[in-house]
Length: 313
Image 1 (tube, rainbow, N blue to C red):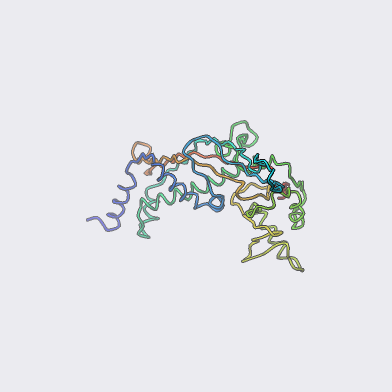
Image 2: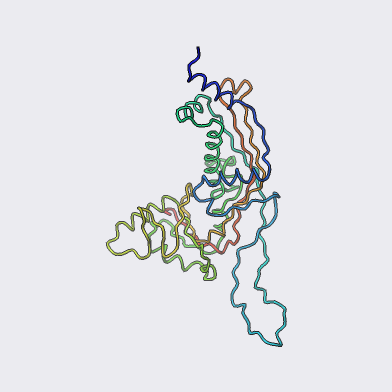
């Protein structure tokens, strides 16, 4: 007679080995992507855009000044050019996430908690896919190569991410080899053009390494730290602006820019494939999972970013 454990395992493995090839409907694909992105730390805060076409335009981030004028009976209704209709193009790239999941690993990690095997597997895939999406959207670089060789990096070279595009901004503080200080960040604010400081979502985007350095400096100060706010051991504001610590953000770079300036763009196209059949699957005693999605990373206004660069940042 089979044991209860064996019966549960057999049922779980039959479920997970079932072949699937599902192009999700637009609404389901968008919801799946929303759930996936919500597993990442920073991407959900950037309010990603979901499109129905693989290429097109989104509105630029623009700020105008001094457009008011005196009204009078002789005024001509010709407008003052307050609204900038300039648009930024996007063109998504097809990306793939794939993984072999060992049947025993899936079963033993799930059976002890009594979870639904299908649901838990999808959650695991979404969590890893979300982490990869955030890494790629921020750090992608089509010119990236493996080490000193000429072979393209299979991950980073998919598309140009936010960091590479933001580096084109003329607003830069270059610390070279200098260790960054709180004062460097405070002084850096003057590098950003005044017209962009009116945005309510102006934010510091820094790496975990840079955050740890700033926390140490604040904690070691003998005087007040009115230029930085420490809360629960984390810096939440610096020189009046909130801080966003971006997981996996490449070192040597930090920026002050509105959150609305950074736009992940994805299409409502998503395909999930799973198979547990074939000689390879049998030999590995595993199921093969593949996700296909389409995305781009758009910076709406490059000069709206003020970057800090340096080997110690």
